[in-house]
Length: 171
Ligand SMILES: CC(C)(COP(=O)(O)OP(=O)(O)OC[C@H]1O[C@@H](n2cnc3c(N)ncnc32)[C@H](O)[C@@H]1OP(=O)(O)O)[C@@H](O)C(=O)NCCC(=O)NCCS
Image (tube, rainbow, N blue to C red; front, side):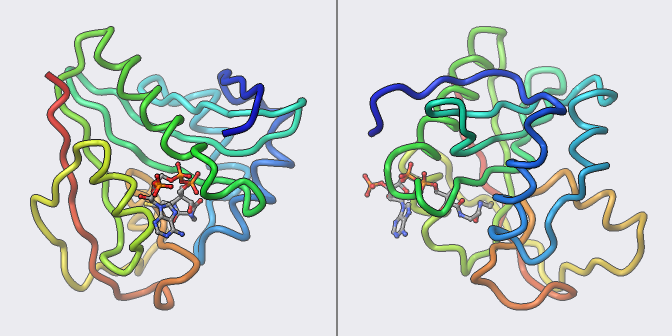
């Protein structure tokens, strides 16, 4: 774990660095407009950027709806992977949610994304179902898919893929 990692709400000024990470992390990366919508307009969304020495090393976005959080995006800079950044972002989101009375956390991930699955399971998430034949066939479908983690760069091409649903009980 790096010495000084700080977490703060993602700002528009962060987006050049965020998008650079996003584009190498996902086959269907979020666009600048998608991040802007989440950080400026979507009232249920929160995006957190983690920095070291002023540089973004990872970020997490979620929706908080009632007593639930839905993790919508999580990525770590390739040079910072396997150093605890992803775990720290997720643990922070869960702890902050619990402090506000959140009791459930959901996310979706491709079954082939082994490293993400390991991370989620280590924090108490359990697979509760699988959506098969997941497709991104229209702009509307793609917009809906922003409620979920985009596919991992290591996974198959977008368009038809399975997604596991994971749930963590926070209390
Ligand atoms: C998934 C991702 C966010 C993990 O972030 P990270 O900062 O590297 O993860 P951490 O260092 O916090 O690792 C936490 C645990 O996850 C698991 N893990 C992470 N990377 C792993 C890898 N390459 N191989 C096996 N397990 C791995 C391990 O259990 C690890 O704990 P350990 O190091 O004590 O064994 C990162 O790999 C990433 O950005 N991937 C591309 C984007 C992505 O797939 N996002 C998730 C979409 S749902």
